[in-house]
Image 1 (cartoon, rainbow, N blue to C red):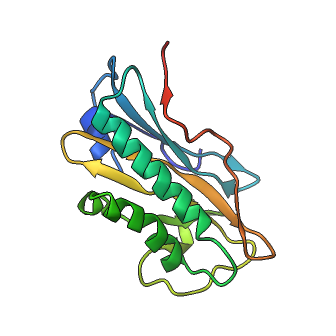
Image 2 (image 1 turned 60 degrees about the vertical axis):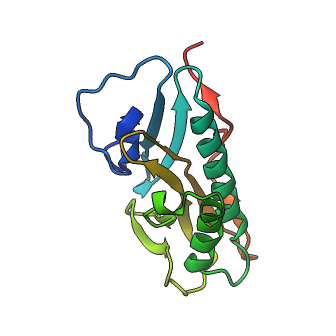
Image 3 (image 1 turned 30 degrees about the horizontal axis):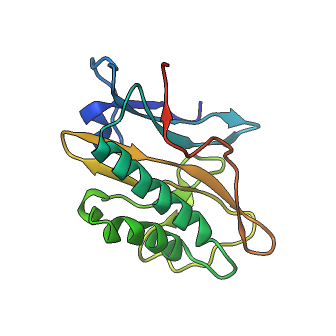
Amino acid sequence: MSFNPIVASGPNGSMPHYSGGERVIGENDIVILDLGGRYKSYCSDTTRTLFTGTPTEEMKKVYEIVKRSQAAGEAAVRPGATGQDVDRAARQVIIDAGYGEFFFNRVGHGVGLAVHESPYMIEGNDVPLAPGNVFSVEPGIYLPGKFGVRIENLVAVRPDGSGEALNHFTRELTICGD
């Protein structure tokens, strides 16, 4: 493992770096799974938000906003783009949807020999992304005391400056347990 996994259900999902407790995942619950492994000393990192039954309309709405935000962050990776550009592209989707105050962390971080390293996808990082950089794009909306939604892919910068998603897990709303 590249880090201790995060399994946060229900209101615990409103804490981006939840570290565990006694809550049991229930029916019609929402669950954030954030995990990573190591291969030849290199780290991975991915997050998906799953449902254990029928999500509420609010959960579905927030999920779709985060999915669009994550896609916008990935699409911002192009020749000359900076970490700030990726952050702004993803963040703007959430702001435009009226949830800006509930997204309070950076959009992403580099992943390599360490699970959190440069380059950072954050406002103020105006260093151009370079071919070979690998980083996360992981926007989220965290509604205190209710639930959270996060979707994370790793992206590699290709030699031509474009981005390539390294994760191949679906980003579609997924209901488990049927």
